[in-house]
Length: 399
Ligand code: C5P
Image 1: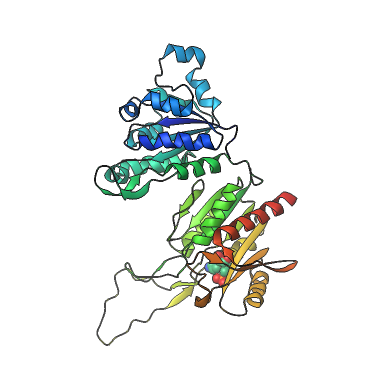
Image 2: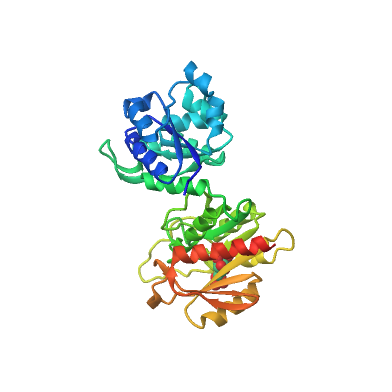
């Protein structure tokens, strides 16, 4: 719910601007006050009158509108809000934001604000893929700007691909997450997720069936409770959650480095399915097929990230949680794993193919801590994530 929250909605000049009118309705339905700012280009797509009528608020359009300055200056306008949302965020608006421009009302309030900013990019897919836009996106993420979308699909320009603005309800969810004042506010939680890919040669790799669904759900649930989340992910098949800092890696070694660079953290949850081995010597060139001859792959052990962090002498997170994916004697193996690795809790699950858990939507876990094992009923991975996030909040709250 967004009761009592004030959202400054900057509508950029793109065809997706019509969806922002629905966004105003959706935000208001949840109790938010929405104050629209229209760029000059936006007025080519939606009228100030429709934005104002739907918001039941005055619409701001011009930096030098003296009436507005008398009523409320642009500085005040930008600070009076709880959150600034830019939807649609065009390539031009993103470039202005990344470059620190302030030459119209929208860019000036974005520069002057002391509040968080959420952008919903929307543009032609070539514009989205253009290196300049991708550079601006990274710069904005680095500045702490939250990003929702864009989605992939048919575009108004007739092309297909990423560039469609996120749907209004997806933007509402991102707004709710950004404004969340939960029990984990002020806590930094690290989450690893997804598989790792270990190269055999430049074109082949060793992988596993992890989709990254459980780790993604955990990161989302933690962010939902107000945590600052660093999400270190291997090449997962589900997209990373909104509102978290994402570090994308390929290999176990890269994952360890990313985890170490993200510390310190109040808690760390290792949900990644890290490959146990990598090639002892990765081939620089593609291994040639030779009739009647099989290649011999020589392996070496990967670092155990969970064990490394659990056993840190200094700077160990207060709560370290590992996962144990087993196919037999689940509790026994997981209990031994908890002791061997030195983590505080192990979330154990049975990933035998007949359970359909690996790559599926559900999970049946047993949480093993110092006090023993607690079996949770089979439930959706999102629900497991929310329950685990609540436990983390309890544990960190006690400390
Ligand atoms: O030893 P096993 O792979 O079964 O342990 C699983 C747990 O250890 C998971 O939490 C996983 O994320 C973590 N792990 C790790 N680094 C590895 C192997 C596993 O962090 N190299």
